[in-house]
Image 1 (tube, rainbow, N blue to C red):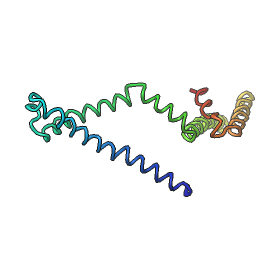
Image 2: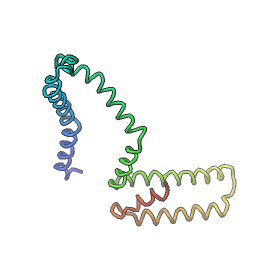
Image 3: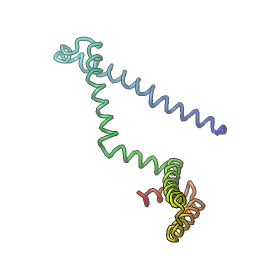
Image 4: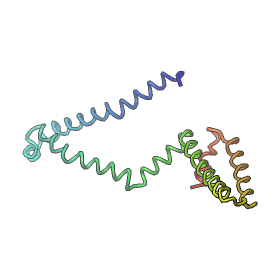
Length: 162
């Protein structure tokens, strides 16, 4: 991790710029330009917003809740967010790997719980269960040995087990 300090600094710079500085700068710029180039020149709008402070207050009281609603709809009510997450997993092999590893762990844990429950009741493990576990072991061993971050097997696993 230490050898990528320049790229890490570049990443933090871009995030600081785009998430904070550019956002605040764009908001101030938009408010200033719209007021002094549009509202100030139209008498009707100038009566509604007699000063720049009035304009900022009204836009803030109406705009902020409206933008919160738009953000909520984007995340909770549209397919847009799902598409963003899908793209994120398609382009970030580390995210895909983490999700695949979690899915594999869940499968293994459920199988192990079945075995432990049978053993705790002094039951014998049926041969078909043993064969199933043996096949799962072979499949997962092959999968984990064959996959790399570049060959996209993790994405295929996610699609096949969706």
